[in-house]
Image (tube, rainbow, N blue to C red; front, top):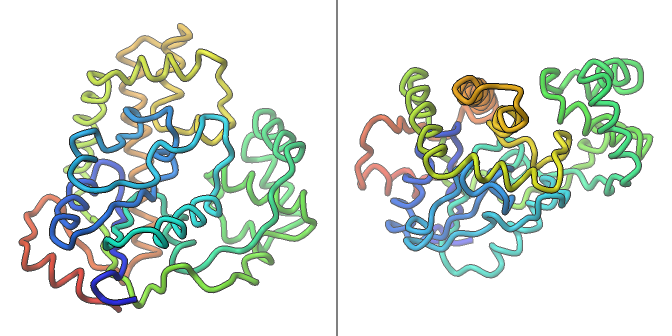
Length: 307
């Protein structure tokens, strides 16, 4: 891969300004923007997941946004295959941008070729999650797959359920599958890698302001449309930050101001988890503070440097 087409990777917490930076870089290097956010792939969440709007998408080609149906299963493996197809087709420099750390890890470290999880196993996992929460998965993995459990965020029910499903479907632990991982799609030594790191209070203020803008832009109508055919909190698309709180309001369980404040609090907690992930997994990436203006000269230097 020539330096002119070497991927640019931009990771950062929610509301940190990734889209604005990606658009600057797309103009600078004749790039296309590829989504690496696990919620922005769903067609049902253009507002609540802060997908680039029509004006932003008109400024540069955008890929893998809002292309997956509400009920469709979509994993890091699905995303990697979509990215590979996009890279094979584009003649522009790819700018891969998002806040889903697992996607970037799979992209640059490789992803184990785990078989598809049967529908009955997934249904059983969903039922177990509803009945027992994360504790049921932790108890099971403690007994059957402690190696995988030791490497998981035990406060993340989705990751715990995934490990439970893999063991239940294959009889082999997730960590054992990962030990047989093939080479990554993107060689991290041949990509420009950027993380956005900012002051916590600066980011919290942006989160507050952005959620208010989402409400003004129709987030409540989007949630209302989403639940028109039923609400299943266990499916991946239902994990959009703020969705549960707005559903609670529509169901008469919360007043709207309380729902909005709780959604903002959940967004701040999510951003905190993202920041922790990026500090742990991406310590060697170029760090940019989005609160400060980065010059065109500095950006050119960063995106021409690989390590």
